Amino acid sequence: MNKKELISKIAAQLSVDRKVTSDVLDTMEQIVTEQLAQGNQVSFTGFGIFHAAMRKGRAGVNPRNPKERIQIPEVRVAKFRPGKNLKEAVK
Image (tube, rainbow, N blue to C red; front, side, top):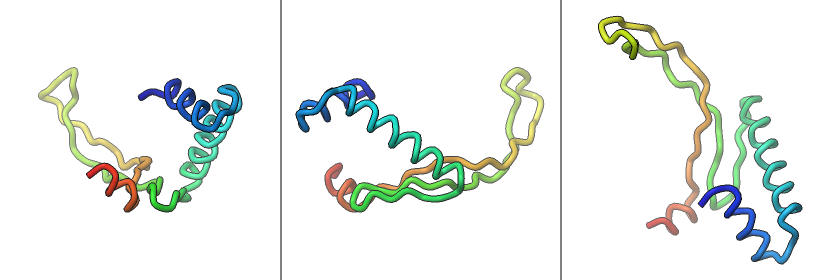
């Protein structure tokens, strides 16, 4: 399912305009992104938690020159930890 299909499905289930649904989803994405950029976490009880975490630096291989070793720096990445209800539904 892509974003367009998700918007259509939500709009149909709630009997609201697709434009309003799209605006709400876009705003949610923006807020979650802003919070993760600030280092905060966003929790949806039962669904899961979005959080930012540091990924360690590591040694890698240059894809253009496989003989050359490069150092990949430490970076902050977005992660998602599923909640209990989501885990149960997927089982």
